[in-house]
Image 1 (tube, one colour):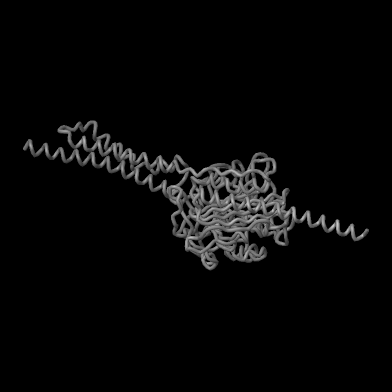
Image 2 (image 1 turned 180 degrees about the horizontal axis):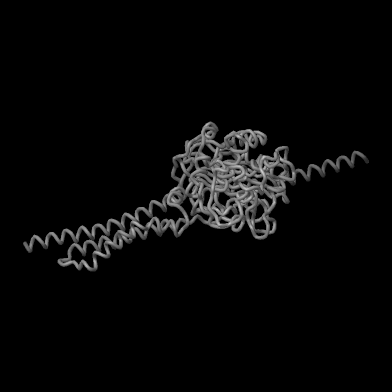
Length: 474
């Protein structure tokens, strides 16, 4: 009888494990099929994905190549953009536990040399920086972030000093406004409090304890770990970049990492460890109050299960990471191509992965480059119209200067003022547009040239006609 029971028990275990294996294999197949379709649809040269569920890495795979021709693997270095922010917030929490930082302490306690202008009685606190409610506008932040000419050793301090004296657009804690300058300031606070460079602190206190052996927070280390340029997107097609890197940017967007390392970070966020205690980890996971969507270094989804996630982008790379404590699930996706106008489409890749794991059908948002094609069409159409107009103007015996001089002046003025007006209306800097939408920036420059040349040629034709008339009269 005992033998029969043992045989039945063994058979049950085998059947159950076999069923799970089949389900996992089917999930892996669906993810691979979906990712192959997505990478082809979005013209992404290389990507790597890892998924952890119920304490196990249930999927890990890589596709394509890097710009140097090397195949992508789980150990390949990618710039992770704003996924750097949750790592910086973890660094802050380590120092909070040590009593070196207090979340609700004004930041001038730690960096008194940084000043700001405000009519409010409230001071910016460390928590305000973490939650993106400091009152420093995103537009002001763009003036000091994503810069390539920073000092390699003192870049963070240099950038913060450039930001010093900024006028707050809102009272602290009043309004959420996502701004990388907040995390730049957190990087400066970490350096002041720890008496180390930001890179050294992150290496010693975060990356090493989490066994993130290929994650870096400075350029030299990134190169050593294999960092190479990624790809811009021109009309949806990949074009190799120049490896843009901001030496002051690690706290907010210029760390490099791998899918293998970031899975370890996700596992820590899911299950904890010795780095910080459970109470501190709970604070990092905690959704913000009311309808706010940003906590201590993490975005939170809109749905009922408000799980933490973060996306990240540099001019040549994109990343996305999330974890769901209630479902014991997390994933990281790294790709080596980016364009700001393609950001919404890229979001559907990770959303598709979540759908597959839930047993639902994944969907891809089509890549839309209509903005660029419309801009190009407008430029070509104006070029044709202006050419015809100039030919007719040249053929005229008598030119009405009262009409044509203002037309010429108007087009030159539009050309001169187009970039300032465009960037002001869009709330971005021209540098940012050039980094994250290079084809659109190029098309705008072409449009400016067309407008300016048309206006100047009107003046030239009028001047030539005037000389001809004067010769005839004399």
